[in-house]
Length: 402
Image 1: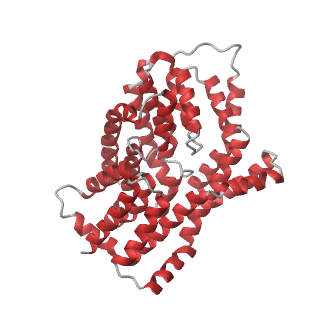
Image 2: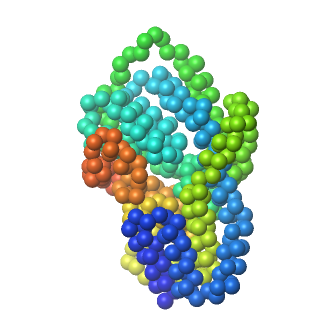
Image 3: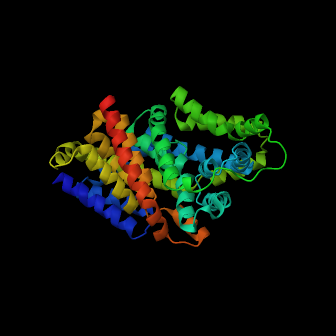
């Protein structure tokens, strides 16, 4: 009965998202329906929401989002990502590698507006060696490579908070999946284009370009190093690097006012706050503890059940909604497989977003190339299916080894 109530809550959230209402309305409906279905008294519900609001995990998550957005806006203001892309263009005179790396660098900035820049870069690099439909998919695919594993993206920060896993170990466990993703599309699409690019005027100073690359990306490199080596949250790592970058890049006090305001994205921060409230309500009901026995009734393994749930749930509702709703359930159902299980699930979420109609970047890329979302899905489907199968196998291998 308790699991049936949870299923109803899940359906309410998915239907609201499917009807293209904002995520904050879906999460609000999820919170209210959970309170009503599990008959939590009003006074107790208010106390519960209040405790979750002031809990450090909630505060840390919101601060992490804020400081990462702040840091990315600092980089954008100084043109760091564009400069880094130009350095790669000079260093790598290889169409195939440029098609992979340049969009991925621009993808470090989590804004749908960047998708147009990525599409333009892929269009100029691939020229007529790929058709418009193929370039639509390739642009969108490689632009999102960083979003698979870096804790500077909302869905990764959210997954880390809800799963309680070590961020540094998670990044290391995802690197093989990043390589697999790049190789899958490399062999299905990029082998069709020649390696050689037109020569550049003059001799490229490799040392100078490498130094320029480090100089433009040092803030992100340092944040990731602090998080991985020190196992420190993105909140403190990001805040330290922001303070350092203020002096290194010679920002003015007037710049700070603009950055402080623009970093407080109310919709994003509001969504994440509601996600944490929803998590608190679910934990209070105790229904998560009943899920392992429920899933064991089915004729397929628990890992495969959750893998399919995360994959198809992401296609329907988007990555943030699925991670918010299902991650606590998954981690409770299979507590002993922690990191390998998390890597498997996040690989499934990432792959499924290439097919999801909730993915704004897909429509931006299609608009640039004058194609359609259906064209992108048709081109993406073989690669996504292949990568997903490899992702599941990789996760099961990690579970067996560790």
